Image (tube, rainbow, N blue to C red; front, side, top):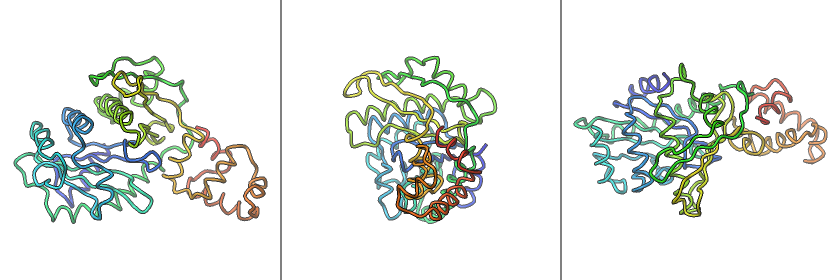
Length: 330
């Protein structure tokens, strides 16, 4: 599995007992991961961490870590810099964990992911030597995340399904799943061969519903939206939630639908390294404009437009305009 392979490579620099690597899309913000890899994290611990994050406050908020010159923090033993650390110590200790080291994976464009490493209770807490070593992992992990996304299929390999709806109750349990949502789940997480643990889906729905409630109470929070790459599910998928009351105290509805057009472009351009100028050209192509029309609209020469198109095709490995449009259409 990918998580085990990443853990093995990471372990050459920083010893740990469990690993999680979460991909975060700058276009949709710091609230939720678009995909993730896990190794030796127990499902009960993940559920406890998710609930603790939204009910009692994140001990190492991702935006806070991202603003630091050294974008990492420790929770549990040795984690004196983290807010509400006493509570998180109790959560970790209840699951046999001594400390967790968290590294924000970022560059000048923004935040791309979060690495979490666990050490079991009774082991040596993470310290200064580990901090130095784990920071060296940031650039190669970013390349790995981007490589994972861009190595996926450019055009969809599975059919688009009607929008599915999942409702999650205030007690953090899935109340209902529409037939369309069940079809999405079968397509996204096949019963055999997916390499995704069974508990991931349930933890994801609960985490998203909690984020919806947090956003309802504070609209400044990142929107509860995930744009998951085709490398995960055979096509880009948009998953977003909304409360069924104004403050998010009732049920939350989670919608699953194909991502395409304006819903896909921000995430697509982020991962493929498409510039703002190149994105405008893709938008015109998606609207049906020919290169000569785009040149006139942008007051650029046809040669410049063709140069931009060559750059886009090189970055996405699209064989031409038709394949690129099919990729964006979703």
